[in-house]
Length: 401
Image (cartoon, rainbow, N blue to C red; front, side, top):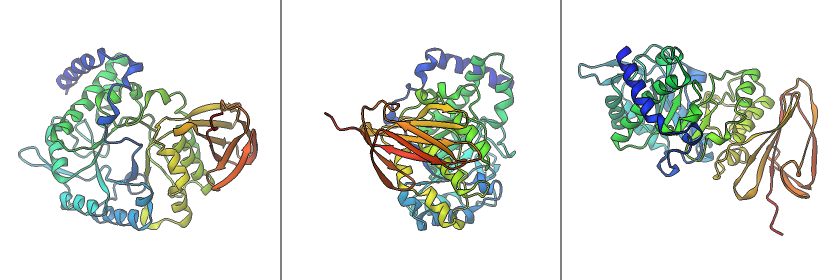
């Protein structure tokens, strides 16, 4: 392990030396990416964790289609940790008994018009203690391609202690970059396009170098949980990161918790609104087979999804904050803007925003996204925002004079 890390350090430092950190996010051309807009789909971990198997994945794929979420843009069915079995004498990874035929599962998911994702780690072990890809990167990438995998979540996990013990920030970045670049190259060598998700919790400022090692998206935070306090902490921590992403290479504040029961509907709408303004991946983490109409309406809201998937691909940022009241904005294609008025307090609060604050002169046409209601042309918008709630606006571009 020590020799591998030393080699990784030398390789990684060489790869990164030619890049300034400000330019790293612009290093890979958008045309080469498998994720021209933030990926949308489902991941098994938030709800099922280790209790995931072939039958459950098939059921989620069925529900994705039957619910209409597939038509709304949700495409990926992603298997997280605990699918891994043993390696054979040649070192080839096999799935465990929960997944008797991964190729057949991929074929089934594809038959639904969906795509299948999988999980591994650049370390020797995954977070749950299963076989990682260290020393088997090329083999594993070939196996995934043969199975028909379309998305890889690559979780730092057992390499994390080595990264955190690095003497300098640059050394830590180099160890990570070399590990992720090795799998990127292995995937590329298979010839099969796969979305490449770097899961390493934002350690060592991954937003500054994730694109340079082939990441289509990279985690910027620790793990989310189904609590308002944790969700909002993660979401608001994205302030200032907009400059490090572009279409095809996305900051990732982790998966959605909508429908898992730890928050109320108002808080889940806040969750979806903030992720949409952040141009974040929308990976549902609930049981799609047991969604309430309310959960389905939140996950499938066309106006919110349109903001998240806006082709301009610009992440939003904080406009201003005053105590528990935060206003965030996002530029949209054609000169429109998304505006989120977030009330983090435990009681309703008045909030307002003016077109002048948005850089617009005079009144502009407003649309309440969640209510799907046109509000007419206004110069100053005022409203009572519910506790832990949001009002999400779409502000039309002003026509040319």
